[in-house]
Length: 207
Image 1 (cartoon, rainbow, N blue to C red):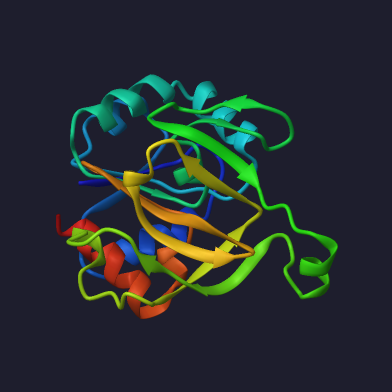
Image 2: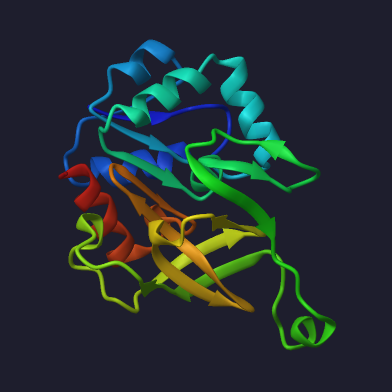
């Protein structure tokens, strides 16, 4: 069973439909017990970091999430679900995250010239990913320079750069996907990224 974590934020249905497209058994839930019993876990999300952490806290999901990820079973974070893995975020102040991946979530900061050159915040639309790690099982059949769909104003800065699976250029080169042991997480939205994004969903579901 693939469990998609519902903490009150995110495009849950589109992620669910992505897995259903390939015939996977998938369930959306906010119950800690069902999270604990998942075979694979997906943490999606769109919105503010602090609100997301509060949503997880209110539903009693923080400790079950941490314990489940540390169990070694396959985990996929999407967009805000990537950022929540980190130690802290500087979105609207400083806020503590799940602390699974050491590092911080920071905002894009552009000069006036860069802004005039049409670099806008949020970073929204199609952009390329650049592979940094070989043999990533969920990037099977994905082009090394594939375009993925992004919507975000903040990006992650891992302390250990070896966890970076892909990078993307937008004023700076930032980590657009991480892979560490059983943890896979993307800043882009695979469920909105057409052929290659759906390949990621299929590959994760098939692990």
